[in-house]
Image (tube, rainbow, N blue to C red; front, side, top):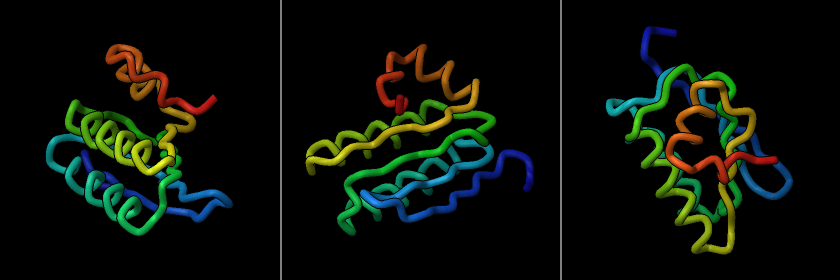
Amino acid sequence: MKNEEMIITEEKIPDGIKLFVKGYVNFTNAPELQSRLDEKIKNGEFNIVLNMSKVEYISSAGIKAILKAFKEAKNSDGDLKIEEPSENVRNVLSMTALNMLIAK
């Protein structure tokens, strides 16, 4: 994986979809994450789990993409949760008071 690259893979789960995000989520690739989340919601996947255990860095653009998808999922009676956030992701979510998105 090249420096500052982001890779997204997915897995169908019983009540929705799980996306595994790896690498760096920054202003150059956050639109890719946003597009992927938008696509899932458009296709009726309203329950989304983001596994962010392998995210080394996340910028405000990445947080914006996640928050937008969270709102869209909620508006469709779904949910978006972050599972296994890396330490960096956990810190950013705590600083932005978005740690409610972390799955318990």
